[in-house]
Amino acid sequence: MHPSGTTSPRDLLLQATDRMSPVRALSPERYAETHRAYESFSNQRSMLRAWMIANVPGFLPPGDDRPFRVLGVGVGDGSVDVPLAERLIVDRMQVDYHAVEPHSPSLERCLERMAGVPGSRLTVAGSPTDLAGYTGAGPFDLVHFVHSLYYVPDPGAAIDHAVCLLRPGGRLIALISPLEPLSLLSSLLAPQPDHPHWFADAIDRALTSRGLVVDRSMIDSRLDLTSLREDPAGVGEQVLDFLLQCRAADLPSDVREAVHDYLADIALPGDPDAVPHPLQAFVATAPGASH
Ligand SMILES: C[S@@+](CC[C@H](N)C(=O)[O-])C[C@H]1O[C@@H](n2cnc3c(N)ncnc32)[C@H](O)[C@@H]1O
Image (tube, protein in one colour):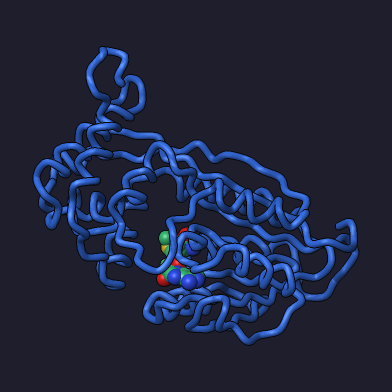
């Protein structure tokens, strides 16, 4: 119930989606295109890059001058990994970066951008696969999943695999959205036939049930939805498609209306065109050495 005593926009959304037939998932091409549009309207990108750059260099073992080894899982086009690699070579003589990404065009773009990093202190390898298909060897100082654990069939298995690839005391980073408020939309609408929708709570359980030492923090960002009002058939549609993880145009009109009412209901106080876009950060330390 809403404070006004009427059915809340959240409940109306739950009711409308409950009556709905399944819709098409985004194609990999539409996913990559809409992801770029979506991220350009959120300050989460810049905040999460800043978070990585502020935290990762602190994981370098002191006084150890071998290459710092990173495995990025689901790196996309490298929009987080390339600035991270650039920052790491400032702190470290040599960085050995492995990128895993099942969508080959995105991996190619990431590798092209990595190749553009000046100097010769960075070595890069890419695998057009997911972590389960990754056959490279550890140990890594860091294995990270930035917005990619939603897509693995079994997050516990992915975490076990990542921990096996870490050196003792190495770090696993998982950045993943909490379910509420914004990701409730994709959890209700995104076709996900193979496995449940994973959000931060599932990853927290998977990490803690393995007895790992975990640090948690929240990156409090915002998503600008002005384009939904100003350009609903253009970039606004791209932003909405990525948010819902399906083609918004395929949805019945009552569901579309419920989505818009829900977005208005969760808008940030004083800014009706922006919604909270939080990101949960987990840093788990592999058992063994202290650093
Ligand atoms: C939201 S994007 C994030 C990309 C990148 N980490 C970033 O933040 O820009 C999720 C990425 O995970 C990839 N992906 C899909 N299934 C995956 C899987 N099973 N394992 C790893 N990555 C996967 C997608 O192809 C996509 O590039």
